[in-house]
Image 1 (cartoon, rainbow, N blue to C red):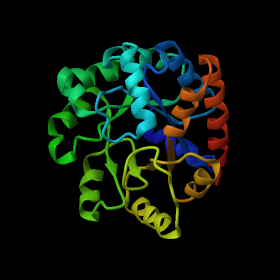
Image 2 (cartoon, helix red, strand yellow):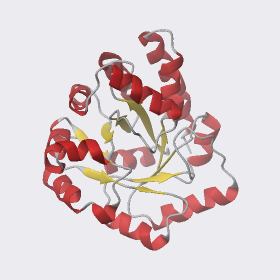
Image 3 (cartoon, helix red, strand yellow):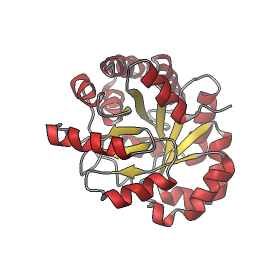
Image 4 (cartoon, rainbow, N blue to C red):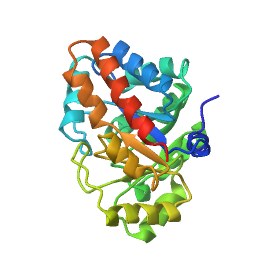
Length: 266
């Protein structure tokens, strides 16, 4: 049975922590190392692991993840073989696996077929940043049919009435974008931003995971009291870019991820 995303957030809360949600780019630097990265992040105690399906036009991602997607595509990554890697990971990990993709690859496969394949690969939820909930009827039906959580995003500028619509149809968790912009942008956390996050969390019927720009233990520590979970992507992918070998990449990612997860203790 697949892990239930909300139960993973609840387990972290019971332990007095915000959930740790690391991101890896599927197929980067290659399929086998990607699997090792997922396994290592699971062994560290990650509650949810987000795996990005490489795409040629990743509009929500900053340069670090864009480059990793480009290199994964050049190495032959496809939605199908990244899902195959996630299936291999699901067989040996405890974390809930979430696929992050864009709507074009899903449309190319068909909403129903993509949902069927993702669910069959052990995926618990899917994030599609460029599919607004107002246009997601067919996707929501496919998720319900195949037991997937459709994870939607909200941002600081999201009006409260639209936030309520997102919460009404979303599943798993609410991905709260910590700033305007793309992933990997330097994150600042003034008191008013933290207060805004608390307001969204108080209103949300789903666990709220904050992402975009989280790179240091200090940032993670500041977010832990106001979020149910913290997503870290570019900072971890950067470690893979900078590593001299696949093994060094796994070690570097594990070191940083361990520091970040520890910082989430409230």
